[in-house]
Length: 287
Image (cartoon, rainbow, N blue to C red; front, side):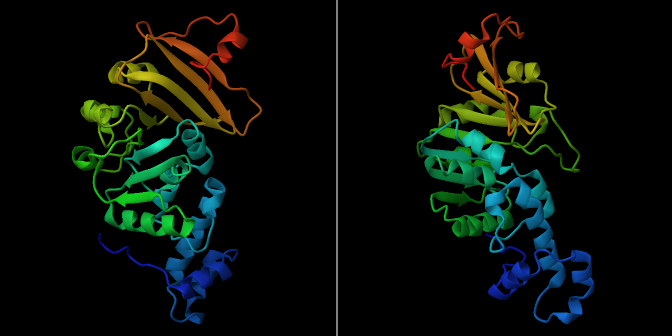
């Protein structure tokens, strides 16, 4: 792996701890008062830590090293990450789009072994460092592309999770599955060969009907909101597609109830529900 741009020493971590609540603009302007510390870099670390405080409270630790702000902004929240993790458990799973590592860390609390795949060398190095600080010793980081990992990894997996990047080479936002990276549609057969279950996260902007038609192997869908704002849509892919898809709307940290619905595969439309209580207690449709 290439070295991360900087790895903090104990003095820099102590500086961050001491100035967590300071006015960062003033701190940078007064940088000449501090010797042996890159104040601007530490201010950027503090800014990222403040942002992660609400997104992932367990990660609000001065000893953790924060990546670039874009990675922090794109990371899953701890709340949605734990929701995903609690849907599954097993021996081994792979997170093919590691990013900052929050989802991998959440899954590590439900699986004996987690393989975190991150193609950016510096970010992969940072992930390994932070997992050590967090005590997540059951996460192994692979610095390679998702496609390369799929082609070379041969150990059994119970689950594969991926959250494809939704920006093109020019950093413009994209939403269609074929425009995201990795391309799930091109790798779908290989994904389902490597694991019996594949959990795909997409942006709410992606049309659910179009996604079902393109993927084909969808068995369950979760539309996940956090405090009344839809954050992500999850598709569970399995080799044998059921005739009806279980669709569940979940609103985390809200008084709104979960809402499970059956979805007819051949004609994608919601079935009429006359006995919501009976349906919600069905194991197939429980959120």
